Length: 93
Image 1 (cartoon, rainbow, N blue to C red):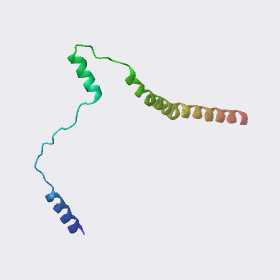
Image 2: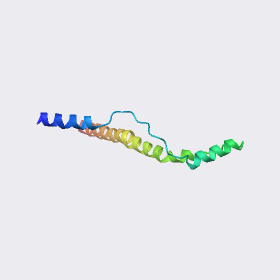
Image 3: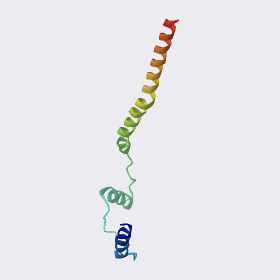
Image 4: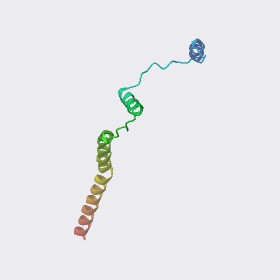
């Protein structure tokens, strides 16, 4: 079985072309790049906005919620259990 797998693998690898090929880039500029290019060519200053930060606000929210659930909630539960245990120990004495 190992011989068969080795044979098939070597046949697949020898069938592959290993010669380097230059792949032409046929993509065109997007709208944002064309606008930036136009502003630079016409001597206008590029408009810089803060709208990009709106993309990161949901991620920040998720990280904060995760951190709260992971660390603060566990510590509160641990403190509650320790206070309950100490109350039980004090009542037994």
